[in-house]
Length: 132
Image 1 (cartoon, rainbow, N blue to C red):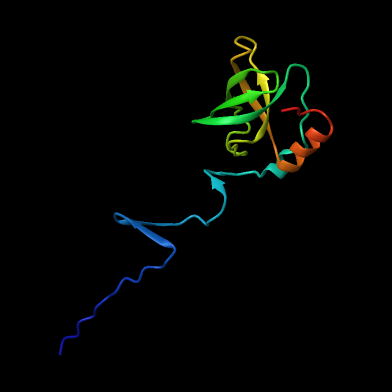
Image 2 (spheres, rainbow, N blue to C red):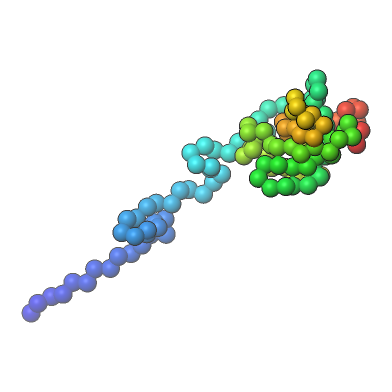
């Protein structure tokens, strides 16, 4: 008597099938490509305004890396998030930020070079840096 063997393919939960090839899933965690996302604590200590830097409050999120900021010197600037902070720091409406105005169009445009946490913003208010 002839015997017939039936073969079943059991898929593992860690395996994704795309076409004919199988690939393993990346472990879940905070990764962007091959670089790990660094939290704000790893970036360093608090940065204080120097020279022509201005403190401001993020008013409107305009998409991509652009934010409308109401600055302490009375100007409302269209600011972009500096490349070093783009994937490391999330900025929301109402956050206190440090703006570096551009050399040209200094009253209209600038770069966001730091975002302050709540306790840092309170420290800035207490020590007289933030008057908004």
